[in-house]
Image (cartoon, rainbow, N blue to C red):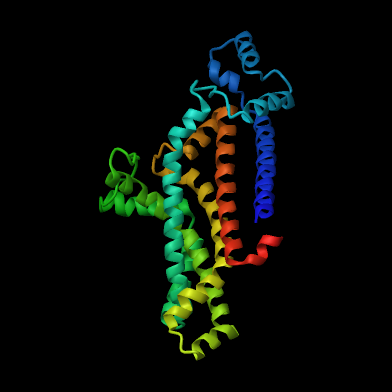
Length: 313
């Protein structure tokens, strides 16, 4: 198991390095003149050149990247070129917003996809057809369009939930739950559709295996067969799909935060990219990749627990 963990962590670190290098190189190729944006449109060429020298933008990008990487490995991601705030402190303040809607969407997708997938596999009649049709529709509708529709109906017309804004959990648990409900549901619908289909197929495959018929022939109750044996054997493929959907949720949160006016990491990433704020963009990249790597590591551990053969790979 230790070798299994070390191999997964090493793969995550390699992924982090590759993506960070790629992101830094792409920021240097965007053509955004961060020094001009900071100095303003009325700045003289001399002032812009001075600002570039101050930010280190007059050096080759590989030298800039080497300096950033040297600080980043020590946990120092610098300061935002525009706000002047520490990137690390800014991410700490914005992280709870993004994590709230992403984790909320993931939990919602996990619970509903298992319930719907198992129901569709066991009840192979009209319920199965309804679940499959609903899954296709949910998967086909983009998350931002779903967010707009939910906001227009549940928030604007019915006024059941707030359309914009975020309430910290420490300030009001009920207000926090209301503020993240629509964003989390908007993110979760696509993941529910994809994962429910996978759960359905996996459960059907397991139910057809010989050991299930053997358990039934021994008089074991259908409930015990399903929840103790079938679901455990059907879980690994569903976990794989769910881990991929988590990456999709993280990417979708960037757009969802803009739709609902949430001050999260996604909104900060969009603004920083437009302005050419490289330190903040790189901090966001590292933050998101670390979350994805951590979640995938947990999924790998769960997969290894469910299927011991995976541990020796």
